[in-house]
Picture 1 (cartoon, rainbow, N blue to C red):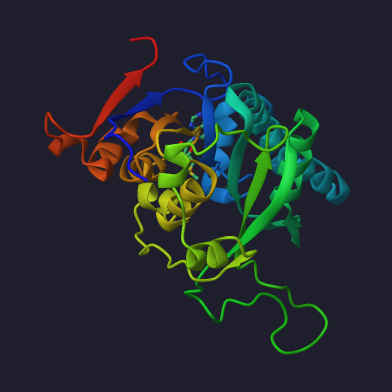
Picture 2 (cartoon, rainbow, N blue to C red):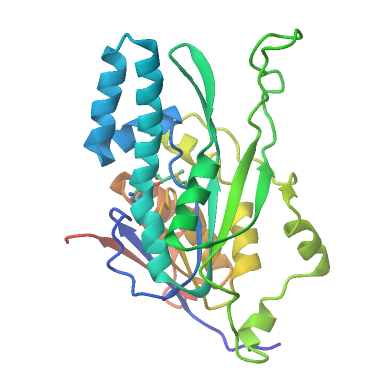
Length: 305
Ligand SMILES: C[S@@+](CC[C@H](N)C(=O)[O-])C[C@H]1O[C@@H](n2cnc3c(N)ncnc32)[C@H](O)[C@@H]1O
């Protein structure tokens, strides 16, 4: 079906997404995001900077010698990290339209606390929080990461019983605000956004094992993005939005969601707390080479300026 050419707009806001005052209620159609993962070491400092209670608990953990107490404090830190994410999830409920969808890419964490290896099941904590807010939980996707370390099994070699299962999947949790979204009959943008049968069969099955990883790069900045190949937002945006919709990423990182939204003719809004990522985002979305007649407009907004 033919649709008129559209110009999309993309806002990149450098600020904390626990408050998204720049976005009106019920104005976003889809959320695609990957938050910092609680209890994964590379995000420890960020969580400490976002909540003093987390910083204090880490200090307490380091000073305690009592083993049971250490276990208890580690669990409190895990819960506090999820509490830091909670205001963002509440904002998503406010800004999504009825029937709008939120896709959250999250991995669980394993970590030794007090010398004992254990799992922190981030995905289950996020489901619990979204349900408390009022979201409807939909069947989720397990994204099986291509393993680049086939021998990285933890535990006791080939002898039962003390080996651990490797964490080689991430979750793409899918939530909806209320019942299914409504469209006007024969909406031309919806028809123009159709996927093929082959795409439908592959994308709507629960295990995705055909996504290639992004090349490993060891700079601290690049490590944050290594876990988010473009193919993930590309599929999710095509599965759960139509041309002309607005897609939000409250944890934008290097701007992968914006890049794919531009490519798929969706509008977008991204929040990123770290202003040092501005040049990386600009490079990724080609903001420096844009022509005056280009089919999209990008605005970089620094809060308080
Ligand atoms: C896992 S990374 C996202 C990677 C991203 N998918 C990409 O393509 O690069 C999470 C990002 O969220 C940012 N962040 C964490 N807490 C935030 C907050 N409260 N508000 C805005 N950004 C935040 C971090 O600085 C980090 O860049």
